Image (cartoon, rainbow, N blue to C red; front, top):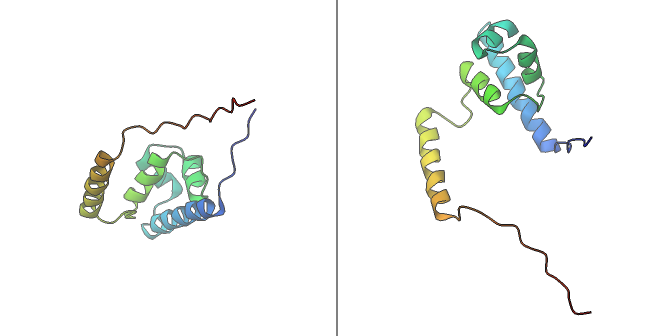
Length: 109
């Protein structure tokens, strides 16, 4: 069995920041963990994992929780649409695939 690579300190801090901000917004709305779970369509233990900063919670669930509590991760809807269009424009200019480089053979023996 292989063990997952540990997350960097920056990743762990980012997860905890997002978790804490979602939890704070939920509490400002006076929603219980179960209230948020019901709105997300998940179990209360998933909300507890999310608000603990666990990296195992699906990113879609985290983004939806942020949206539901009114936390704008990338700005308002217009800003997100603008950034999305800009990024897709850049992606259109880049190659569709990147191939791994094959190791150079040393056959001069």
